[in-house]
Picture (cartoon, helix red, strand yellow):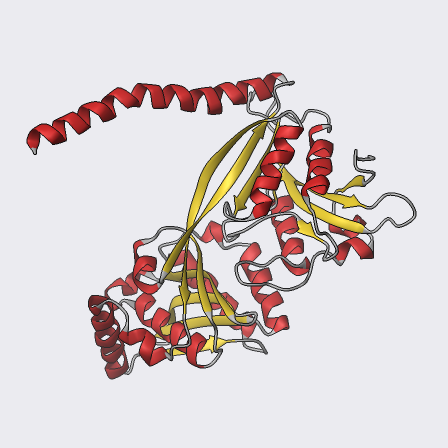
Length: 380
């Protein structure tokens, strides 16, 4: 498809179909927040297929003889039931561990706005496209507004929404001892007490796997923890083992296991690609809940990341879990864009449900909020 800016927009159903020049846009690195390279997207594509979803890679290239790839937006599509009236359309190729998902741009792109307009217009022109869902995005970054404008220029009705919180730590050049000294006193006491008790018992040991022959055995131990742990084993199958192996090959893997009586009791999967550490997954066997294995292992992993790997940022990815407020120093938000097509029946139904529904809800709740304010003033 030829875009209005003279660019060409193509869609590929898999990474295997894409030309090498386009694959080069997937820089095989992790960055400061979440993986965004070729290995990462291959794993995401496998995960999508295992869920019965179709992957779609929209590529914007320069027109004419140049033909350079300029941007790519990885998406996934779930085929809705014929009996369902939910809008049909692609959403970004992301997972529960993704903290930032946006179009990948070539280094030569100075103004992404026309490329994104061409890209969104091409997606909307697809048959039976009732809408587009883009998340998670950093609302404070310019590309968020570029995407909003592109959706509106394509004639879509747009609604933004809060997606999740992202807690992270700025180490600020501190040593691990200095970091632990700055923790809330209650947490510091718990770490010290539980670590001493475990060490004194002689029943425990901690091992951090980074690669080599022991990785497969460590992954098997992780599966044992997840089957008995506080997190669902279904969230672990398939995707995470592949990511662990890929990170081991890159030298990024930090897979921490805490053993009690030689049984795996707690696991933490971190990725350290450079100056950042990403806390991807953690779980503990509920049989050992009173031992606070998760806290002890977290302290060990933090000390290693700060003093050995010399990271500048530790990122806890998605979620507002209470423990993150104690360990991390900063919180940021990730948002999404829901763009619905008023030219299709399901798109109109989506507009009624999301946009009109939100307006009606606010209108109904406004009097209740006013009454609560009056009640507080009267009590005061």
